[in-house]
Length: 118
Image (cartoon, rainbow, N blue to C red):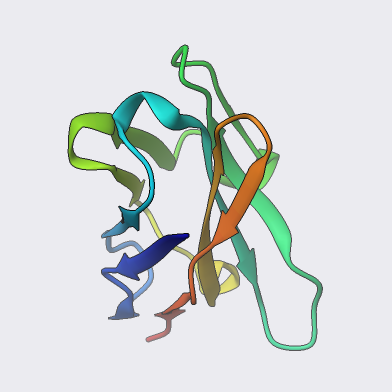
């Protein structure tokens, strides 16, 4: 079994930054992590894709965060990150970490709240 825990959410003003972390633990090792991704769900909306990074370093982002968000990972620490800059009120959501492990096992974290408001 694998557990994912997100950290770093909070309340910030528009234009500020936050860095989310996702720490994996349990029955996995660094080379077993294939893709790592972040999703978000705003109130009353469906969960949506934000960013993804493969074990080859390939990244992709949803259009609304391109140029503002950066996904990264430290496989040795079993940790993924989402650096969020120039935050906007529309970025307000619960952010979820997702990992694909051993090519077939898909895990989710419990989510961390990000609120952008003046």
